[in-house]
Image (cartoon, rainbow, N blue to C red; front, side, top):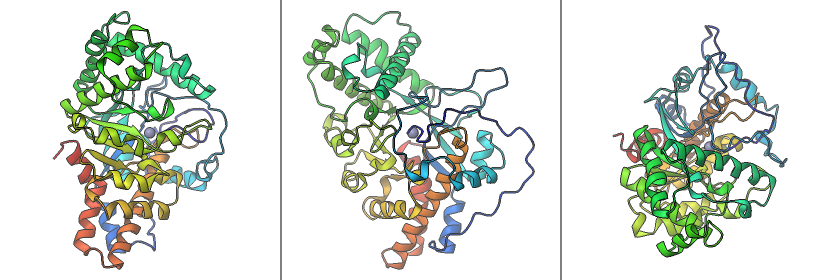
Length: 414
Ligand SMILES: [Zn+2]
């Protein structure tokens, strides 16, 4: 997700000074059973979705690879109250962070692994502490996209996707757009996914919701060929849908997950209706895509109830990244409880740490979302314990699954 507080980017001052302070003891939340809180805090977390910024040396250009769509400013929206400038928990997080370099931050927050959703990785974000989720949207829009642009935000988004596609063409060693769809698929689309896999990517991420609705159809090859032959003037949507399916199929073949931004997004023009995860159901239940594991990022908020039903699909997963930033822990706890009471093996912790603004860096995002996530999970499990739904050992097991184990199984790490 992109920044809500639209106050320009970065100006990252990495804490170079030796920080000798000691981390304050995490504040206990009275709504969480104290023993359970200790267990949850001690779990080395797997953060399924974040956008860490790569530290750069002085003289080196500032990192801008933390998002495929790092838009400097969108038209103003009514920002959620927790994402407005000046929030006190951001200042508190800033004060509590001991060192701002990526690995030290993960150590302080007891995050064992952070999935970095970035255009590319690089020095400062070492594997295996950071795993890569690459971007695939650009491959879906190989022709003139003017007809898809309905507002200034989308104008900025598509310009960035076109730039990224040019990069993918170049990295694929292709100097001009291939003449045939077959060539484009083989030499650019699949070549790019394979290159990402070789580069260590565990997933391809789609930000479709910022570009068009989720209504991915199942077009015939002939329809997609027509789209290609016409240069996108007819059947362009069929062509996009065909390419999406080719990518998703390849991800399944390679053992990579498909990450999809679901639910609310940044900007006043964001198409919330088109981001409803229920629109993804045809993909989840398509026998041709059963090998592909789909992760619905951000838990589809506000469609969290609808999404719960989708967890019955064997290839559908959910993370709750960003929900710890935009909402209160009690609200997230209610969402988590419903999911955990239904299909707990498919629920993943995530932060969506992102350089939201000068004041609200990805480090503050990671800090706040990690504490909020652990607290919300604690509230949910404490409630289930109190209601006699689960035993204490089961509560602890569920905590380990959500904070770490479910993701590690999903990505074949254990
Ligand atoms: Zn994100």
